[in-house]
Amino acid sequence: MTVRAIALVLGVSLLCDSAVLAAEPDIAVQKLPAVTESIPVATDVRLGGDDKQTRFVIDLTQKVDVAAFTLADPYRVVIDLPQVTFKLPAKEGEHGRGLVKAFRYGLIMQGGSRIVLDTKGPVRVDKAFALSAAAGQPARLVLDLVATDRDSFLRNITMQDRGARASAAKTAIVAPPEVAGDARPLIVVDPGHGGIDSGTKSGSGQDEKDVVLAFGVMLRDRLEKTGKYRVAMTRSDDTFIPLDERVRFARAHKASLFISIHADSIPRSEGQAEGASVYTLSAHASDAEAARLAEVENKSDVIAGVDLSSEPNDVANILIDLAQRETKAFSLQFARDLVGEFKATTRLHMHPLKSAGFIVLKAPDVPSVLVELGYMSTKDDLVHLMSADWRARTADSLVHAVDAFFAPRMAGAGGGVR
Image (cartoon, rainbow, N blue to C red; front, side):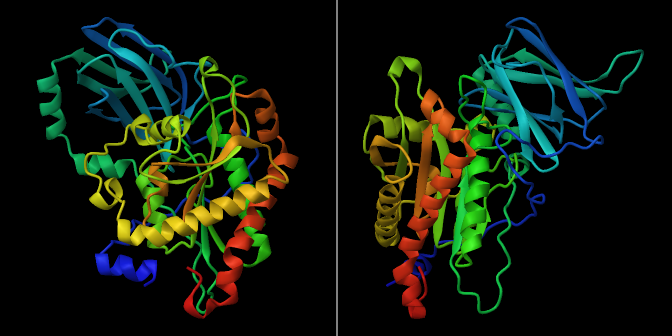
């Protein structure tokens, strides 16, 4: 029985929301989508107050609508607003004041931005409003926070519209249109992180989200150039995509292969590591490093202030053993092929084939791997990651592995390629 048939027997849902992403720009490392003059710009930020009351203020070039809500475990305040270009001082948000430990900001979807404040404890949003420019002062966003107790905090959360909060953070992805009679397999390329979630950062300031997007676009172009595959990307610009939405997209469009692209980093206190790794899904991590990385990557939605409380069970508990048996075997086969191809072109980690419980690999009916291109915390690896020549060679190796994976299936395509 095929995986698809098993999935149908089990009643696995293949539903997915649909929306249109912006046109795909030409990407280079650290190049973000062009900003038009109509988009408001955040130019400065201030925090004032103490552990009882704290005010958060952002200066803007024009007034915007704002909506604020709170989330627990960890305690956060989320501010949603129209798309804003953030031109704040370097490292702004790494340290807080009063009730705020730190904050981050970025694009959450096309047309929408988000600010997430990590708070020291439970808080109540006393006021959240915007002011127009007046009397020589710029337009401003103002948020007043007041300390509260946990019971009051949780009661307030239950009064908030969870459905609206969950949908506000979701941007669906569009696959290339299917042409009648086009039996080519669909490959989904998933550049990790994006928008408000920048991923890891190198010592010299490069964000993982930019590095992996540049590589993802290059890989897409090379796969399409073969003419053998249809290719879709979970994101083609600096947009945040929730982890479960990446999984839903691949399953809804019956993807034949899912490739998630990342770049790792480790603290100096934990030593130095280098080289590429390829991960497959496992309920039990292959080693301590794999477990650490999966824990970090699986927190992406929390970083972006996404409410995970209403996620469907088929994402939260996706290990449907019967349906995954064949899929896991295919995933491991591709991972081994990829490591073999990388040996000729790319420096590998000392243990390049690993497994862990990554959320984005949990589609029970789509062979999936997560590729860690290297370590942004390691000087030599970062040089490679920033090199167009290195990315081209590595992308070509990935294409060769894809060709090897699909060759026997496409040769006997009478039963389909999956």
